[in-house]
Length: 355
Ligand SMILES: C[S@@+](CC[C@H](N)C(=O)[O-])C[C@H]1O[C@@H](n2cnc3c(N)ncnc32)[C@H](O)[C@@H]1O
Picture 1 (tube, rainbow, N blue to C red):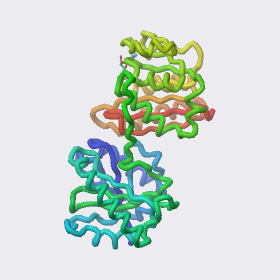
Picture 2: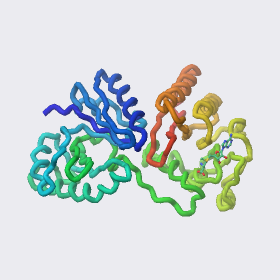
Picture 3: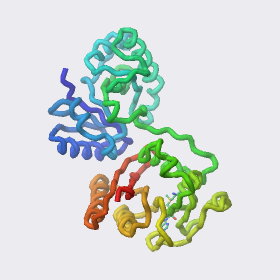
Picture 4: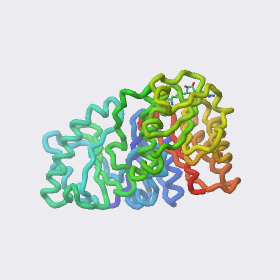
């Protein structure tokens, strides 16, 4: 069966950004289609004119900012019998490529999250039966595809697959992190999640550890600085606001009560992170300046999104940075992600070590 439906999961309220971005990527790989979504639903259904299995392999998942998780789907199941769902679902699943795992997913909304226990139970019952029938491989086996069950109600759901190497390993693409009680603010989770996404775990020691130096712009009260200190870094924290006393007592933090837009480090640092609450274009310009000056090796920064035309604003900021660096002949890797712990903002990573 030709699959022509793609499910894109996103943060509720960002469906139009998710759809517009995916539409652009589809065009880039020579495909077309149209999105369907309800505002605040937390997902987009993208109907393709071509083969969804081909598109989901051609578009790079990591290049998408607003899509948290995705899969190529069978036509929706809309009237499932409540007393025997498996008799309808199991035969249909044999139409999908062979998988070794099944992720239980729901829209990340208040109503959706209430369905999570049901989705989990249904997914384990399905996986068990499929393994008994030899349709699904044992959990530890290597398969090229991962199966998804996306539950919208007891009678309405989607079934699909994503490439194991081109998607999120996490259910609903959500990185759940425990808030470290000693951190001065919940913002701390944004930087921790950013590292999980942008820095492969095997490289953490080399890239984050070993007494590196860092600048934290817009640092107060210190949630991001806390993460940097935890990695053993020595941090210049720039903010007119107060930093948490506990951080200052570590001896690893110097507090500069200055304007981030006028701050220059005495000498280049390994990392610069920036969570300054300001217009995204202004922050992008500041990031470009840091890169052009060669003041850091890597940076992670937040772009606070405007109320309207959020996708265009993101594109403009990223283009401005990329064009500025290209014009200067500086090699770089720039990527961005709407992280689970981001709200009206996205997080970007600029890697200048490739120069
Ligand atoms: C979202 S908060 C940062 C939270 C911090 N990352 C944390 O984890 O605790 C934004 C900060 O940006 C600071 N800020 C805004 N404009 C600034 C500027 N021009 N220079 C320095 N700091 C600025 C504010 O004082 C505020 O503390």
